[in-house]
Length: 92
Length: 134
Image (cartoon, rainbow over all chains, first blue to last red; front, side, top):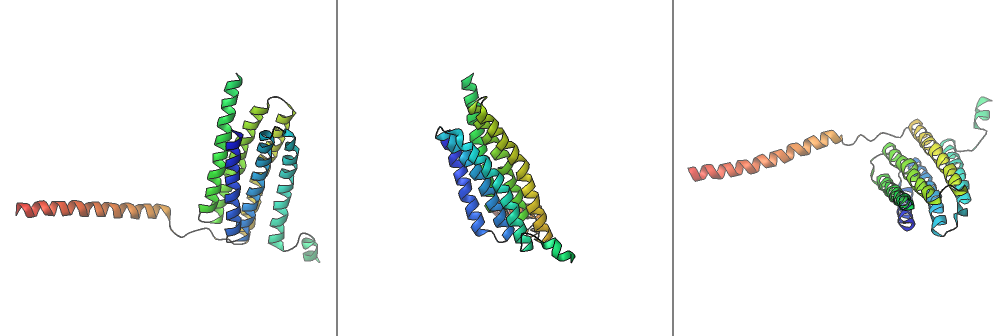
């Protein structure tokens, strides 16, 4: 049953990759990459159970945290063209 | 008892994985960006939630289940937040809502065409009957 879940998650990751390559705007690509990251968390969790080594869950937890920060950072970079000091420059 | 838990976890894992695949297909098939956000949101909350709860049932009351619960809580918090941030950024950037073909209008038009072809066929049959009568 872990194999079935893993197959589904892998198919979804493949579809998300296709969407990331195909997406017409940058927001489509960010959306697809965000979804790819979430599915990576699931893949790590399921593969830990599949291998009988659930210690992989720590990696999944860290990946979930990093994925959100990464998504917001890439989104901000795509929106403003820089990652910081934009507000300060506009005030002066 | 453990058999019932196994079956429940199996159902949850397979349902969650199929929700993920459905969301992936939606990500490729939906017509505009906002609809695609909706498709990706399903995989982030329902698909991931079902898979993680299925794994939790497999793990039983251990530290592993607590870690899975942490991952689940974080994903459920963060998925909609990231979706909302993406949505607002795209809207502020002026990404257009898809207005190509109105689905209701399209369905109405196709229904009318089907009815017309049906009436044509019936009319042809009726014409044949009339010509026989003549």
